[in-house]
Image 1 (tube, rainbow, N blue to C red):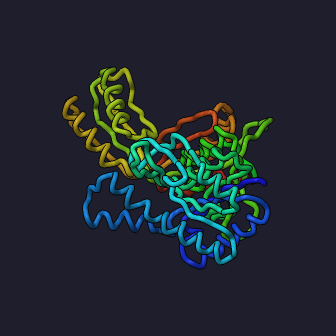
Image 2 (cartoon, one colour):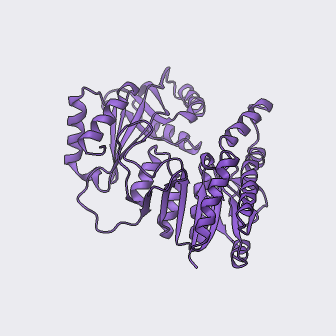
Image 3 (tube, one colour):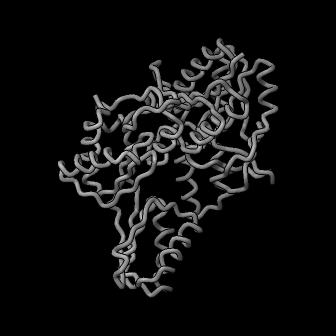
Length: 402
């Protein structure tokens, strides 16, 4: 029989009523074949647990955070399994460690090394529907680990890959992948099919619908991933390999407002400075979104870095130490920076598209701070006040909204 892995996010299992509805959906799927269920913690449980930890200490140890946060998924799987029993479905709950999701030892952001899965296979062969905790695993040292935020997506696709499932269905609170956020931009279109590469770029540039690591695993192992709404029966979006690429054109737009800009003012011209600063930042785990400097043949130049906002304190600490060491006297920072990314296979090398974007934003009198391109995206950095106007202009220009 065909095997499907289905994952329900926190909004889909936020209370007892929604758990029962999700279980009913699984009961219908079970009539067509074998099913493995992966669930996230209920609603905002993870956020609430994090807040609770902060009431105890501002700097909780990563190991204990993993022990704390994995409790959320254990509650979900137990309740979901009880719900399946109500529909006369044989079901059994498992933690990540019980089904052999083996990770490295990096607490709060572990990577999956292997999935053993014998207990899952045995349960399926005995006619059970396994209900598995997302987001978690166990290291070779038998330490409980978590996969980072959004890790339940990763769990689901990794299980589908390891057990050679026919498909992985991600149930969430939207009707699929759209040309932009449908909750913010009216009239955007649902994308019926999108390539792994385009989806990975979308997820990496700010789209929240599917975690980038899950998309990467799907691409590597060829697992078709379908994103669907758990609250209705509308068709979703299929993420898969797409052959015979059409003429490059924008497929979607995404954005990120949670960015941080820091600038070292009047850095002495020294080739070692740039490499030293970027090395210090990246060695500390900072995710550099972009960096740029002024005129290279001037004796001094301003050196700017854009990073995720959540890394602000870490970046300030590192830059502050380096500024003293390198005798740089002035540092500026800004939270008034955001990005929009136009996504589509091959558009980064299609100069006509870049020219059209510049022309459209110029017509709207929207100032661009910086631009980067890749084969799959054109990424524009600008002040926050311009973001919505820029996105709406480009959605209309490239016919990405009704």
